[in-house]
Image (cartoon, rainbow, N blue to C red; front, side, top):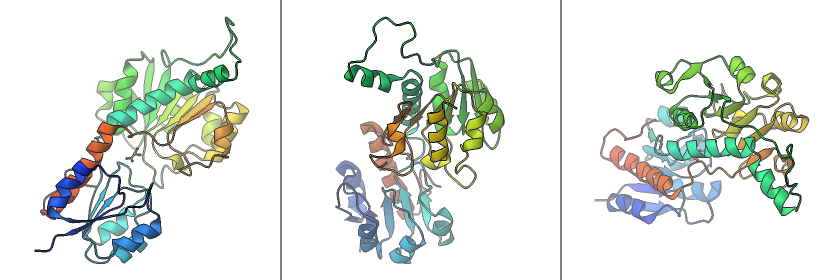
Length: 321
Ligand code: DGY
């Protein structure tokens, strides 16, 4: 019996995860390092039954058309799916799954790390030492802002937002606010108060973006939003870069309209080395490391594989979209 064909869009997926798939499927692996181009993927996708999508390339109608009618399963090794045309996938009766939840703790840790790095000026501190500009004993040197006693606003109290909130409790913050579509049942136990986006902007000392990118959230942090924020506000983004209007953020950071930013996500990724964001001392940047731990990436790859295997067996995926 011929095995179903599965396209793996990145050859660096841990072997022990692929072994589970290999037993039942024929694997077509994109070997290009560090990652395949769109053309490399398009060249291999024709006729496959399933795709293990481990790339930021868009999975859109061109990809689906090139794959052809055999394609029945899409499994993305990510929680986010803004790079996938979900409507197009679903309209063709293709099953789709992601890897939500297994990365929540890792991403939440990065959110807290960025809040501390940006608030306490940790990166700048290191740079000052490298320049030999350490001013010993000055009472007003390198003053930052505590998480302790602060009001923190989380935009999007989903699964990752809740994990961030849990961790923030240990920092003895004074208030936890959140905004989004609706009141979340988990909020009461976390002591989080539902407020409008406007109130969250006006009242928060730290704002953490943990919402997905979609038509409703794209560029929601624009000049108007920044002008409502406190001067001491610190903004952290672990969602998607497109939620922030980046030129507006740069203006807000340069003019001192807000205090600092900590970004795990930005536009574009990778960010060019001459990008203005990299020139701002009050902007901490890391290269989309949210889920980048050995344990979490292994769990994500494993879940993405199980989504495919379940769908091939005609069962519900463990993490359907
Ligand atoms: C995801 O899975 O969507 C995350 O952004 C990865 O870090």
